Each structure stands twice: as C-alpha cells, then as structure tokens.
Amino acid sequence: MKYKRISGAALLLSAAMLLSACAAAPSATEQVSVQAASATEQESVQAAAPTTEQNSVQAASTLPDATPLDAAPAEIEVSDAFSTRDLSGTYDASAAVRITLGGASASCDSAAVTVSGATVTITAAGTYLLSGTLYNGTVIVDAGKDDKVQLVLDNASINSDTFAAIYVKQADKVFLTLPDGTVNTLTNGGTFTAIDDNNVDGVIFSKDDLTLNGNGKLVVNSPAKHGIVCKDDLVVAGGTYEITAASHAISAKDSFSVAGGAFTLTAGKDGVHVENSDDAALGNVYIADGTWTVTADGDGVSASGTLRVDGGTFAVRTGGGKQNAKASSDESRKGFKADGNIAFNGGTVAIDAADDGISSDADITISAGNYAVAVGDDGIHADGLVQIDGGALDINGAEGIEATYIRINDGTVNIYATDDGINATRDSSAYSSAVEFNGGEITVEVGPGDTDGIDSNGALIITGGTISVTGNSAFDYDGTLTFTGGTVIINGEQVDTIPNQMFGRGGGRGGTMPDGNFGGPRGNWTPNGDGSTPPDGSTTPPDGNTRQWGGRGGKGRPADGSTTSGDSVTPDARGGKRRPADGTANSDSSVTPDARGGKTPGGQGSVPTNGRGGKGRTQTEVSDATTAPTQKMATI
Image (cartoon, rainbow, N blue to C red):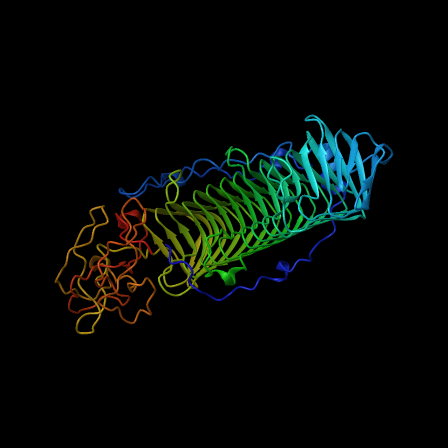
C-alpha cells in the first residue's frame, strides 16, 4: 500500500535524541573489550528455524508459494575488523620523530621529512609527532607501499586554504593517533586545488588504509567538500570527533569499522558514506560501539555493501527530520541505509528522518537494542526480509515496517502509522510475500482512512506473541491464514478468529450517482488475472454488506491525484492505482476520467456511466484459507 506522505501527529523524540554533543571516549581497555565477545555471540542475528506446523501453510493458487522461511538470513561477518595496533592507541614517544609546526613553515631534523614552505612531506615508515600550528599548509605522507606510518597529533592545528590538511598519497597503512587530553584541529579554507592526478576532496584524504585512534579530540571543518576521506579501509578505534562538512562528514570506499569513540557529525550530504562501485562485496560498515550525534541533509549512515551495528548510542536526524517529510527532494534522507543486508544486534538508537528510518535493498535483522524511530516514510524498510528477534522498537511514520517477508520472533514493537502499520509487499523475488508472528509484544495503531494494521500481499502466519491492532481495518491479507497460537486483540477486544478486510469480487461500484445517491451494483465479474477493467453492469444490489456483493467501493481520488474527503466523488474522480496479478504497479496513465468507486458503502442506487469498481472490502470474518481471494484488484 502506498498512499505515502499522509500527514499525522508529529512525534517528538524523547530526551534521548538530545544527546550531548560529545561524550567521553572509551579507554583503550574498553576499546579492546569490544572484541571480547565470541564469534557466536557477535553473530546472534540468526534465528531458530520455523516449526513443521508453520511450514504447512500453502498460498492461494494464484499467488507465489508463501510458506514460512526455513532458513535464517545471511550473517554479516566482521572477523579481524580491528588489529591490536588499531585498538592500542599508543605510541613510543622516545622513538618518535618530532615535527614542529611554526605558522608559515615547519622544522624537523629527520632525513625522512622534507619541508618546503608550509608543506611537510614524510617519506618513510616510522612514528612522527606533530605539534604547533601550520597556516595554509599541508602534511603529506608519500612513503613506500609497504610502509606503516604513525602520525601523532599533539595539540596540532593545520589549515590549508586550498587543499587537504593531511594527505596520504602512498603507504601501506597510516595511523592517526590522538593522545589523551589533546585537542587537534584540521580545516580547509573552502576550495580544493589539485596538485597531482588524485581528486583530493577531504580535509583528511588517504589513498590507503587509515586508522584513527587514541583518546584525544579531533575537530575537522570542511566548508567545501568532505571531512575525512579514505579510498581504502577506514578504522576508528577511539577518540572524540567533531566533523562539519559541506558534503559527507566521513567517506570511505572499501569499509568503515568503528570499535568506539564519540562522534558529532554535521553534513550537507551523508554523515557516514561508504561506497565501492567496483566491488559489490565491499562498501561495508561495522559499528561495534560509540556515541553518535549525526545531523545530515542526506543519509545518516549509508553503505553500498552491508551494515552491522553491535552497540552504541545514536541520535540521527536527516533531511530536517520527520516534520520535513513532504519537502521535495531527490536525495535520500534515511537514518541508516544499505544496498546489502543490515543487522542491528544492540544499541540505543533514536532516528528522526524525513525518509525511512532503517532501509535495505536486501534484508534487515534486529536481535536486540532500543529504537525510537520518527520518520516521514517507513520506519523499517527492506526489499527482502525484515526479521525481529528481540529489542524494543517504537515507530511513528507513514508506514511502520515494510518488506516482502516480515517475521517477528520476539521483542516489543509499538507502531503508529498514518498508512499501514506492517506491510508485506512484493519488492523482492527472493521471498514470497508474508507476515509471520511467532512471539513478541506487537502493538499497532493506524490513522483514519484507507489504512490497514497488518497488510500482507501474501500469507498471514500467527503462531505466537501478542498482537494488538487499533484501526478501521485490522488485517488485510491476500494469501492463506495460519492461526495456531498467540493472542490477537482488535480495537481492545481479544478475538479467536482473524478478520480479513480484503478485496471483494470485482470491487464495490460506489461513487456518486447521477441522482446524488451512493452505491452501485456488484462487480459481477471474475478477475481474469490481467488487471483489466470489469464491464459495465446494471444490476441494483441489496445492501453491500456481504462479500458476495463485492463489499464497499474503494476510496475515490480526483484526477489530479489528491485524496478526497470521502463525502462524494465527482464523475471525473478515479480510484487508486490498479495492480496486475504479478504485484507490479501500473502508472494509471491509461485510466479514463470516469467515476471509479466511491468511499461510501454500496447500497441501492442507479449506476454511473462507465463507473468501475474500486477497492471492495468485505466485513466477513475469515478463519481459514477457503475464503482467501484469488487476485488482488488494486493497490492502495
């Protein structure tokens, strides 16, 4: 269902959203402890397989097979994310080469360091301690391809008007260490002028692996481009970071792995952007811990590969927040986004996003953590699977959870949606459409209008848990029903059969009649699977309260696409988009401007010229698969 951008009561995020700009960074001992958990514990995203009883579900004959999944989603491996040296954050002061920054120039007595005006170039492996201030200068690392270089910033301040403050041109790996108690500042003046063939566009720019560690503080200001850019693997193992950038605050190519730290990111585009357009197996994000305050015009955290979060505290605001949902923008403004799988295994997460909260082009699993999500679109969206194995989620948005297959095994899930609360679509060929409840406490409230608490374009499976739904339409499913356990409450009353507010045969004829009355004949027509329009009819039906007579007409929509108040539909009004049997959406451009279904239940009345059925709804309660519809007639 997709009547997006329906305004609802704005949700004000709790005080957790107003985290302090920067918290104390974890100690080296605390950082190392991130790795203490066993691989089995870290890979807790996998859930138990469904029971044999669950696997007995069969889909309706015209729908794809919608039996419960017999395997857990793929795990996101993060072995060897951090080396011992990454996590240590220490250096040997006695062996360090000292570089003194002196305004317009610098001084150093090592043969591995050359100084030309305000440009300092390091050409060999080793540890280099930088202190002082450098005006309109840069520090360049141009060492051997097998060299490891450690830069220790000891209250250093480096500004470059037209280039990067630190530029890693070549090395095997560079460690940028922030000693405890130090405050270091790196800035760009607003332009980036090329000095070689590389497109240097960050205040810190590294062509090779880069690690930031220690317990000090780093302030980065980039009024023109990015804050920190790494064209290889980027690791942060500690420290406090305040990064302001006109584009991405942090950008990496192959991976971005975080053991801990405190981050305040303000970005004109994404807070964290990791993308590898050459290798789909790369572009991954792994966050083990940290305190994060992210304010971004684009996405909070974006990955072209996978995204895994094991812990941390997050306050993420994107695109101006939920209140800015209707603002026109071609940019993605999601809280957390990945092209690959997403796994949240813990943490405290507050999201205020103009777009989706957590969004994946593949699968999403949530096994633990606390989530407060206020969004302009979907709270959680996956093209494939959304699986919730634990945690506490509070979601306010246009839709709560949307995916092709939605499975809730455990946890506490509270949803308020102005459209559908939980919506199983057909966005992925990897799964059949289904909603499956095996446990947990699920509370769903939907706004008025053409909305469903639980909407499945395939099967509905309930074997456990407590599901409480408040709204005009509690359940709408197109496939079969399995109801073998759990507690279901609808509008405050426990039920032992599951109602199905689904499509009727041909849909109600509804609409405004020439004499001003509502109602029309039953769409006396059997769907033929091609999404075509039912023929005209002239039969005057009895009251349209039974499924036999097609229920009530669908919600009328004027030709300009806006929604109506529902009191009447003019002859030029048309209903929602039609959808063919394969679940894909049509453009509606071929729909003639004739009445197509009103909002008022069909009673007696004359037939409008060329009127056609909108979305028929039945009031019949259904408790088995025998009453499942054979075809969905329209999308809402």
